[in-house]
Image (tube, rainbow, N blue to C red):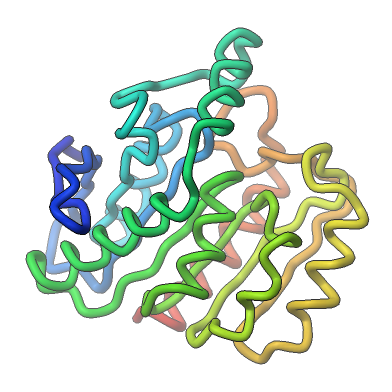
Length: 232
């Protein structure tokens, strides 16, 4: 259903590889699918294809394009999991959110889709939070976003709806960080947090050992309803 192409980065920095999946008819809106630390792999492409099947123009940017373009990793393979953590250490999140803004511009200006949302996972969940605070994206969703508790000083700038899915047994985002997220974000009218008792990081992966089918279905249903309400 999809194809790989490139879009212009901000500041004439280069061109960002992206996977684009198009709906059969005119798109109802657009959704940027922001990967984990494993690149635009088969699972991320499948998520784009699923959104396209629901009528959205879906785009997944290669967030590691500056230093590891085209990488695709399997988190169930220990060596590839560690490779992904290495890329995380090299990644500049400020540049990453600029790439999300570049995708917003491309979708609105070149594809003519006014309403643009994003949904991110892990590192992508952090970028979804940052996009909500730093861009004019129409709606954002983050699954098990990392380091959000360290960026709560940006929450005052969130002007459009944001939903965060928080697995309570997340081994990468502990109870203290989760409590800080709730304390900082629950009072904000544009932000909704959903807790998932007993679930761990990666529970909504398309497949593999991390996936929890029931938890993924619940979270994905909430995400679909959230986008239907806020993107149309």
